[in-house]
Image 1: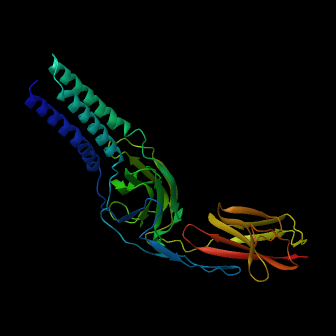
Image 2: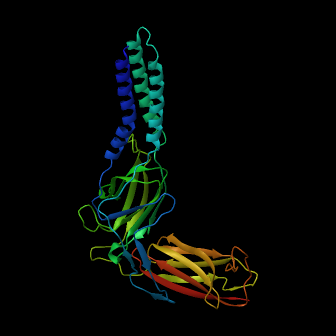
Image 3: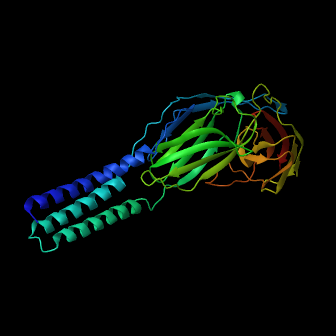
Length: 360
């Protein structure tokens, strides 16, 4: 084989090997889509921060009810998400390509033996096979979603609330996310093939469908699917359920009713006792039960924002003071204590009831 022929062969193969990783990455980047909805995403590698911040305040009074509780949200909405691409798989492929090219250069710089043309053809076939294997091996670990959370799980968009969705990616991925109603129909595309970084990512939904209309009250499911940026292979789809309160001028303004609140026994020893707290709620609600001392300090929380169905709700308390927990658990001081029950429905309406007991 002449010197010029050897040089041309090495140059051609080296060019293919060195440009292949960039070509493969270009294919991965072209898989991404664009997002054209009222949805904003934020991405972090080690810590998360959101462009949307919510603040809310609510007040509870003894045996009183309040109207709809709302949380105002200030959001920064982007029509397109900025993306970045991982170079790990590409660098590995480029490193292998460089090594193979150097090996070929050394081999072909020597005197070519008889049958060198067929030898060169065989080497090129081996290189092509190794390139395919390298691409497959770079995608053996599919992207995975962990820690999917939605807040709140019962949202009322009529009150100005937004749905905050948070999840963690184990590696960079092309992500698709959508909202489905109880009939299984897709009502909102939140992410459509968007490149997201590894780490915590957040999405904010304001309650509109793909046509810009407010969704109806009911139960919904969010589904999120990650895909490998190079191979396009999809990881496991994760989902979470939530409910939407009444909207479109039919907002629920009635607070849940708390009736029949009893505490047994109503007088407990200072060393503690098993106390049973029972009451009825008129609708499904998140229920909190607290024990307060005479200074209105919370010393125990038998129920904390627990989802409860309409009907009888029961909570238990061991008659101990947990205000210094976990440093210590203390006996009660002699005096009067208040059992406070708070119920908040899916529309944010709240109601409170109290019952007094004595420690002696």
